[in-house]
Length: 108
Image 1 (cartoon, rainbow, N blue to C red):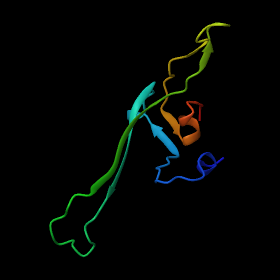
Image 2: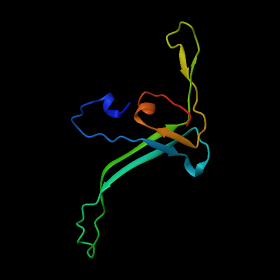
Image 3: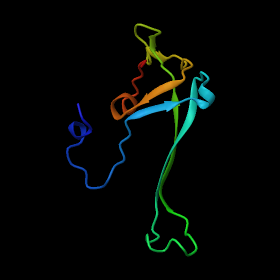
Image 4: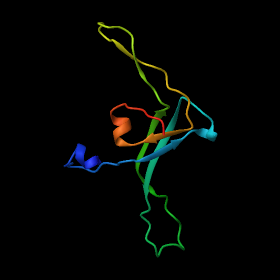
């Protein structure tokens, strides 16, 4: 399944990330922040001798990823019969549209 299978037409641009988030210092953590930053260098290539302008930031987002979780049934007939368990510590978490947007976790 591809991203276009979920939304075949979009009137605006999306940023699609398929990859992995690695924990700080490679140590297992139940959750940690990750950041996506996209910048555009608008200075012309010939203007290398002049004062360099900083790139323009077009996207800067921080997300919190978590290790694998599971849902546990807590009651047969209750208003909320399921609960989400705490995230397990992990050093690498898969980031993709299918695993994160529908709140599904798996081990790599």
